[in-house]
Every structure is written in C-alpha cells, then in structure tokens.
Image (cartoon, rainbow, N blue to C red; front, side, top):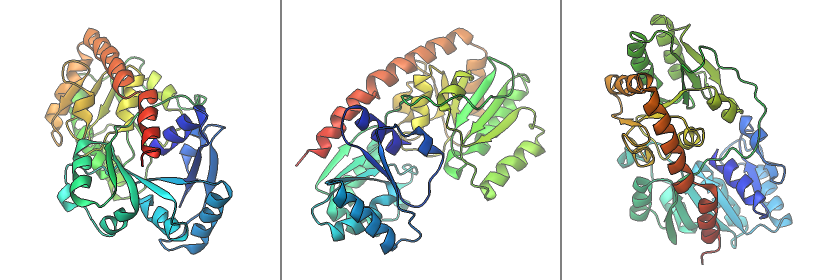
Length: 341
C-alpha cells in the first residue's frame, strides 16, 4: 500500500513516477493514479534473469536513476545493480515483526545492504536495528502516511446495523492476531449483541485463515462477524464503520491505522510498533496490551458505551494524522532522501 501511495503522491507532484510489481499483480493495481507508469515483470523465482532483464531494459529506456525497493524486493534491486552499477537503491523497511527483531533473518540482507544508498525505516525499532546491523551509507526514520486521493467507486456494503459496526483492516496474517480480536469481540457480544465486527483483508486460504473461520463458527458468531477479503474501496468501507480496531501482536507502522485517522474513526489498537505513538491513550483512542482479549474488550466496550468520547477521539486522531503523518510533509522528506548524496 505504501508503494502505491508514494507512487501516486510523487506523480501528483509532477515527478515522473514508476511502479514495478515483481511476482504478482493484485487488487492494489486499481488504486494507481493515471499518471503513474507501471511495469509487471512476472518474476517466477529468486534468480529469474528474464524478469530482471525486462526490468533493466525498462530502467535504461526510461533513464531511471533510483530504485525505491520495498521489503523483500531489495534482492531484485540488488540484481539490477549488478547490471547497472550506477543505479541508487533506497530500501524501505516495513518489517512487521518489529517486536522480535532478535529473531530476524540477516542473510543476505546484511551483505546486500552495502549497495544501499539509504535505508528508510517505518518505526524507531527498525531504525535502530538498521543502524546497528546493516552497512548502508545513510539511515532515515520516516513514518508512513495514508491517502485517499484516488477515488474508488463504492462496491462493498457492510452488513449489520448502522452506527454499530467495528472494522478491522488487516490481511489475514498471524501477526495481526485476529483470533485475539475475535475473543475480545465475543466478550463484547455478551453485553452488546447488536454490534458487528467486519474483517477486511486478503485471505491467504491457509491454516491461520481456517482457524479464524473455525472460531467464528464454533462461537456462533456467523451473524455478527463478517469477512470480505481484499477490498479496494477502503474510504467507502470506513465511512460505514463506527470504530476501527487493530489487534496485532507486532507491527511496523500500519497504514490501516492512519486510514482510520483520515476517516475520523475512534480506535482501539494494541501497543506495538508505532501504534502507541500515533494514538495517545485517552486523547485520540484506546491503546491496549497485545495478546490480551480482556483489555481489547474493555477498550471496545468503552467506545461503544461513550458515544461523545468516540467523536472526540475521532477528531483528535484525524488532526494528529494530518499534522504528523500527512502526505506533503512526507514527500518533502522523501524527495530530500532521493537527492541526498
């Protein structure tokens, strides 16, 4: 999502912006602005020379001098640099398990980091880890931003009663800890049976996904918890919601939280990554302990039972998001990184 947001924002500012999808195309493609130039190289394996050559030809033809590589795509950027030694690599670290960096795999990242011009980290934990473990020339902490600039027609209609919907924007991955959220919602259901929970995010059809669906069925929550898969019309979805939640056991800086902020949603989030920094407890939302369904339930119940406070939280989070995680401020810093020698 951040790659798409950045590409769109740069193009809007008049900077020639390209986005390259490596292995798969997906729902985010529809969120690309018309001014963004797009390439799909259909990479089949780590050392797919046909895909790399396609990217190299594209870079040469368009006279591109900087690759902004996100997450594991640093390896593709490194292979390109073997062909084009003068290319600059900016690596953007979004590593989600930033609460457990001791277990992070370092090879081949540490070796390849010698070719990085700059490492951008989305939270302070990742920034300090990069400075201590990598070999890049420069390091920069740059928190994410969110944007709804590309208008996607509404196609998703949330079920349930208006003004009584809780939404969670998170792909179905273990670090997002949907099961803890579901256990908390089960507690909430004991007091407020008319509220519903809406899970929006990519379903990988794996054992974790099956565990989520199994819990919903076993706890008789089928009429109260709804899964929608990956949806492009995020802005329209959040307009239908009343409370935003994230129950993750680890995070970097989730774009979903910033999207809640832009939508003026009051939130309950776990105190992982930069979530606690974005949401100051009792000022713009509720920050609770991770892996604790009782605390999550308490936070949700507080917002359900205090509608005036919900409005205050929503407004405060919106102001904080625009002020500290705004697009213009972000772009100014990013462009300075691109030109930093």
